Length: 77
Image: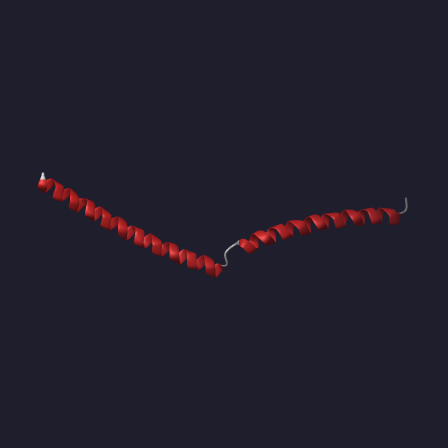
């Protein structure tokens, strides 16, 4: 075999490896495209903070109601 034959084989091998890399990059790109943008993430983050504040306030109110109901039940008994 001549040097030309070897370079053809090496070139095919390198091209095959590039194809594998390109396929992997396409797969990663598809996954990255599905991720929320920074603005979307920040909006969700703000929404979660709002929900957390509302749930915390509701828990405080429920605990207060429980305390008041317990006192009423004690007075009634």
